[in-house]
Length: 220
Ligand SMILES: C[S@@+](CC[C@H](N)C(=O)[O-])C[C@H]1O[C@@H](n2cnc3c(N)ncnc32)[C@H](O)[C@@H]1O
Image 1 (cartoon, rainbow, N blue to C red):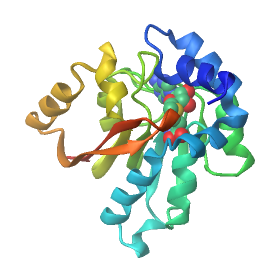
Image 2 (cartoon, rainbow, N blue to C red; image 1 turned 60 degrees about the horizontal axis):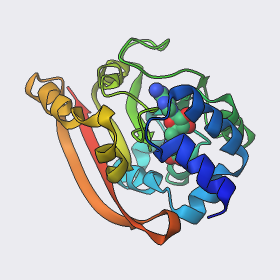
Image 3 (cartoon, protein in one colour; image 1 turned 120 degrees about the vertical axis):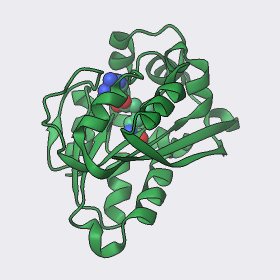
Image 4 (cartoon, helix red, strand yellow; image 1 turned 135 degrees about the vertical axis):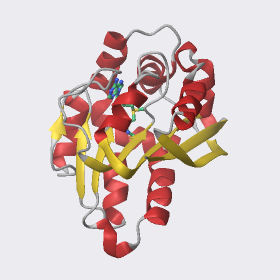
């Protein structure tokens, strides 16, 4: 990994004690080469998200399924989903520079340039069949645990939330200590129901093996 790649990766995604401003600045500087580095270092959460959604939606239903991809970045999740017949995909992402890369390839229908938090976003409730998030949980400068409430608000009853991330980064971040506890509490409260929780080992930066994790919940 070149020093520049390593700095961007550390500051944007993986470094500890990074604030949102610095992480966002690093994503901005990285945007034009992010896709190349993603391929090189296999940031391929999008493959698992696409695999799960292919299992849930038969081919003839995919064209009508509405999806909100949060932490959309340069659009890697949408690019993969489009290959499998999903066509109606919107992006929610705070970094204009990352979204500009997605815009170049017309990957999304609508672009919401904002952060998802525990408070309601600009998008009305029950707007989508599916919400996806690839790599949205990383160091402290990423999607907060409480944003799960907002994810559930945005998805129609009977729809799905599908998230994939580095389990190692989730475990390393102080932000996510209560993440799975909150997921379980919302299941007990009847807000959603677990469909998938899967972990697997994958190669990543500097040929290290990382553990990845995916969750899929059905919104009730
Ligand atoms: C590791 S990148 C993943 C990008 C893309 N999903 C992918 O799979 O390549 C994480 C993205 O989440 C975005 N992000 C960080 N905090 C966010 C928040 N609170 N709401 C929405 N997106 C956020 C970052 O700007 C960044 O583009």
